[in-house]
Image 1: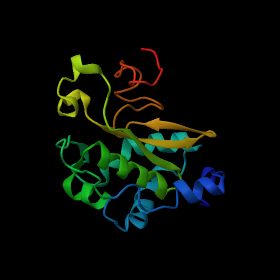
Image 2 (image 1 turned 90 degrees about the vertical axis):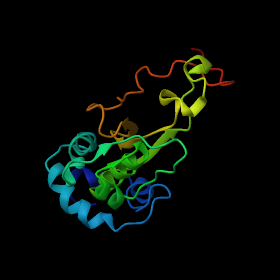
Image 3 (image 1 turned 120 degrees about the vertical axis):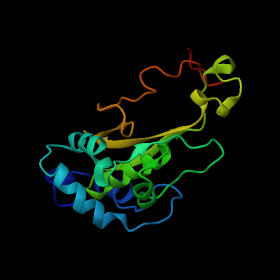
Image 4 (image 1 turned 90 degrees about the horizontal axis):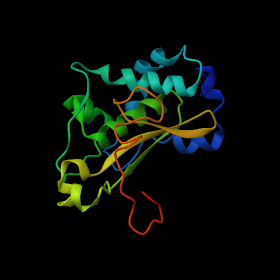
Length: 183
């Protein structure tokens, strides 16, 4: 919490809720924090703020093993809350496993992070006649990071910018049923 300098500015409640926890979802528990701190603090030590540090991690944390960790879609009927060490051993994970990994990488250096996601993309029956079984219609998880006084998101290993992912902007055009949100 004392280094880098921007980690000191994280409000105590956010630190307790979104930095200190060692679990993200229901993944098996690994002692990831000492290794991640050793590997990732040098990557972000000279960054000037939380946002810059999170973007650096999103671009570089995947190289902790060789070949680097990459995305592989999981079957729709499989729970994929992989632990960080499982992801490292496999050199790949689904979006859920990658999100758990990036949340833990962020937390290891004092960046408040959490997972967010959707159980199903509502693209309508035309695009998704078989529901989640259609490739473009299943679930997705991504990482939210607190920086500059608010939450933003990173699509793990994807778009190298803040609040950018394959799903935003664009991607989902149909409103959620009974949400009142127009198209």
